[in-house]
Structures are given as structure tokens and as C-alpha cells.
Image (cartoon, rainbow, N blue to C red):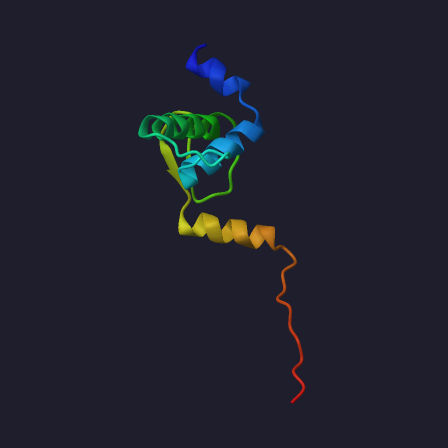
Amino acid sequence: MQFDDLINSMTPEVYERLVQSVETGRWPDGNKLTDEQRENSLQLVMAYQARFGNSDEAYTVGPDGNIISKSKRELKDQFRSDNDTGSIARFKLDN
């Protein structure tokens, strides 16, 4: 199986398991990843993110393999648009 075929055949569930395994260093069954497994899993995670990820995270891997980072301004604008009610909750304090 070619690398591209492997990425295209991955389900979101498999991707999430790989992410968790890379983060924790253990497979879901508790067994520890070898260095080679961790390296290969990380490559799969990055390739999957590059191909299918429409992430709102500050740092992502683009389709060309380069790291894409959002500027502080882009993150602030994104935060504002996520909370577009335009107001802050205010509560009266009774003393």
C-alpha cells in the first residue's frame, strides 16, 4: 500500500487514536509505542492533518508539508467571530 493510499483510507477514528497514541506514547490498550512506531504514527498524523484538516489551531501542517501558523491578529479575529454576540455578560452584584 502506498503512503497516499494509507492516508486516504484512514478514518477520523483511526486518526484520533493515532493522535492520542503519539501524545501519550501508548496505544489505546496501554502498550508503549516503540520509537519507530511513534515516529511513523506522527508522520501519519501530520500527513492526515495536511490532507484533511481544516483546523482552527494556531499551528498546522499545510498540504505542501510546511507549517502554517496564524498571526496574533488572525487568532483574535477568529475568537471575535466565534463569539459574535458582540457583548460581554454582565452581572449586578448585590452588596
